Image 1 (cartoon, helix red, strand yellow):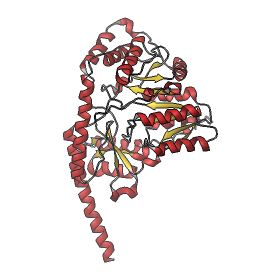
Image 2 (spheres, rainbow, N blue to C red):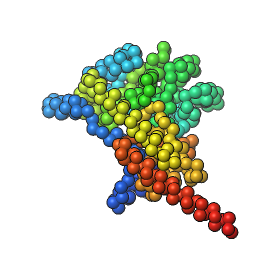
Image 3 (cartoon, helix red, strand yellow):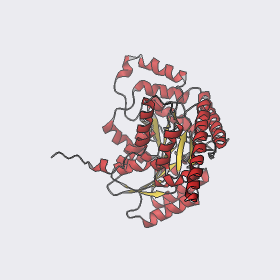
Image 4 (spheres, rainbow, N blue to C red):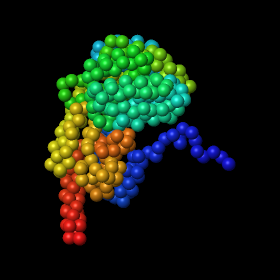
Length: 407
């Protein structure tokens, strides 16, 4: 009999978001108007000058051949230039940078490169699923730590080293955070770097939301900390900063041993992104940057509209300082349901799709993630739908309470 249960697949739990996605698809097939605030999929077009560069490069038949898995030299130089002007960090494009097929692919393949069976990594909970499951797929084990960048995280690092056998090989950082929108400062990064250098632990930092922030303090890079490149590699992406999610272009930068390991793994797995996509990505990093500020302002306007409208609807939304997400507590009346059942109920009754927090880890089960991927008019419509839903639910609760009292 053929084997139908496979080791790595068996290590993965059922995909939590699949239930909500299936309900959403059925509702739309039935003609219902679903306001989708679930998946973090930017809804605006890529800036025109980037698209034009893609078309120009694609018209050249020489660009239709295999590319290079580590990325074309011009794009790696553009990434180094970005780090220098944005973070005042100098990188060697040859040994300290690599182009990836999005930051998600880079993280997953680095996990394959550095993980031995039974190795332990420290990953926040809740966090973006690939932060933990990239290592689980690679045969490692995950020890969870809190996601807030404060003393509780640092204390958890110490416990993780003291009580783990074998010692953890790496710790995952993600600030600004998906899904929580937490932002770290350089003092926090400095403490983590000192700790990891002392204990011989690598740092894998996911900085995909570096340009989506809503105050006057741009999020820092862990590579700004002196000595960070002894232990740290950082992943970035063009998906959110330039509205390029489907283009699948990201980067890793930092520790040359980790970059070298990722380069070697990728040389066996792919020939890199389509060269015209890489040429267009180079134009994005080297070209006019006003579009980045416009995208940032768009998300800020949507955030403000959501916080105001949802509050008027009776659902308080903590205002996120960064990212394209809000991390929102499940309303108290529904807390007993957990995030998945609440998300399904919200979709069914209010026609609004959100991501259940449990999909980001069991410690996220009292929250949902709301993505700012609809315009302000649609966000306000979602709030009106939610207000009606909450009002009706309150009425049902009152009727239920009266019946129980009469009995």
